[in-house]
Length: 195
Image 1 (cartoon, rainbow, N blue to C red):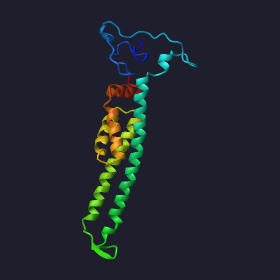
Image 2 (spheres, rainbow, N blue to C red; image 1 turned 135 degrees about the vertical axis):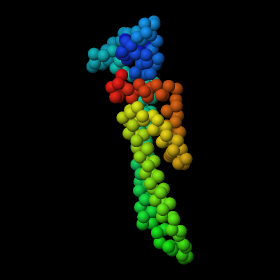
Image 3 (cartoon, helix red, strand yellow; image 1 turned 180 degrees about the vertical axis):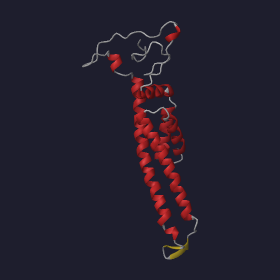
Image 4 (cartoon, helix red, strand yellow; image 1 turned 120 degrees about the vertical axis):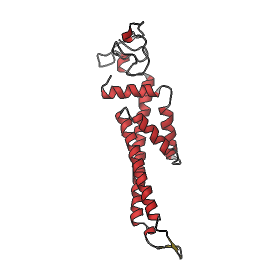
């Protein structure tokens, strides 16, 4: 049987198309079938029908956004990892470890707790970097848990002005667009082979 929306071949008992996420009326229940074979010429160089070879427009748009988000999350994770390592280094060897430091011609007193605060910021940054990297890898690998992790990473990243805010908004728009949840489920099932 074939899906009416994307033309992909699906199991006769399927209730949802595993490629585009469209609800399928009928299936194993014996109701009137909503699937019809697609009569199309084979795609160039293959023996498969063109509709099965070429994915639907909405499927490629969603898959393209997920891939772009995965790459952007990995880049942003690398940037925030570098920032966290810098904070940890400064917390250990930074100028606030000295009781006095030069600020122009004057000496100023630096509180002793400053070094601990900078280290805590570095460790929090490492944790958030790991979350962002997990979102990026999960989206690129089409893991079933990646949608939730990327939504959490987007919410955590929203307060980071400019790049973080833009990436967070872009992620939330893609993840909550029309039927993104069903399309993500179909993409992740197809990549793991649990169709």
